[in-house]
Image 1 (cartoon, rainbow, N blue to C red):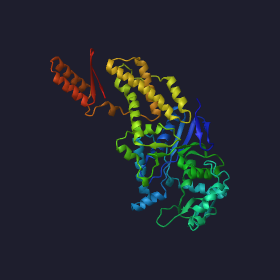
Image 2: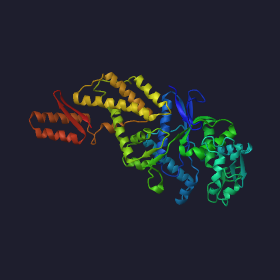
Image 3: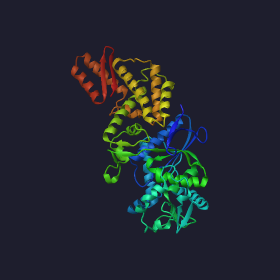
Image 4: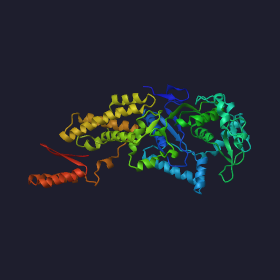
Length: 481
């Protein structure tokens, strides 16, 4: 059961082999912190969260780094509009990021480097590029000389000669930045400070780094010259990741990453998500509408991670229904374990089921296939729960049911799916089991006294509070809806 991954760099699926056996160095290009995170961020963060969880599940020691871009024109523009500062804006939306990700059940990365905290590493990398002939200063700016890097375009598959054909129609030769470049394809590593902008001192004058050099420096500072997995959205392949490769590999002479993984984009009702179309939805807006965070995770995981997904009301409704099924299975042990005489220890997992799950997911992180295994377990536990409610017994041995449940809980945890026990096992007014049993006893006494009106009233009262009573020759059983 070898894990194989589709590598954007080679355009084929390859066996996963790490630089250091048993260890994974993983970097995810994180968010630019000028606004609240949206559905596209939700998908990316969920996908790479689950990739990390799965790698740990199959035995790897994972060091997972995710950056924050906290220097950017969009951040500066927002700060100007709000009469604030870039730092205040960035800090506010970094805080909001952690709030949103916590609601989605995203595990925190091992480290969150920020561009503003990596200035020494950024300047050092630019200086090395300059010394090796890959960068040149120009009137306070520093540019990367793209044609000096022979392998430019190897990630995206783009060739400079093909891009050159339409380049003249898209550039403004009067643009001061264009005039500073030796070649139209060259891109900025360092930008000279403009009046009123925050700036850092450097050998080339006061200024700030370009976007692409920030990630190259943060990867190198935190993880070294070559990492195992570089992840991000498909929209970052060109130019961001292409430029990262050019910057890093020109200096080190080594591959920046062994595997380049990219998640597909999110559409809304078939259209690209954008504020201009009015279909821009933030994570907090969605969750504040009452959508279960676990349903959002399920929605993301039902699609192969590299393909686009379409966010629709119907898709979220389907994911919500699917989550209810899995949630019933996850709550089975808390609802019936005591009645079945389960011990307090953890039961062994069903090896065949775990093996099937792993064999499926090992095919390029096939999480939809892994979910199929979870649904099978959850539906079986739900069926057994119904039998317990209606017949007071099970068709399967308690030991086997405990193994099924423990297997479901474990595999669901790999996908980050977790049912909140307290929230799901209490009724809306917080009636305890003892209080319910007392109500049933009152009803029994009313029936003995042939006070059927009172008996029905108690039954209806409990039903209104989400508790169903089932009468049989063996007595009255109940369950929470």
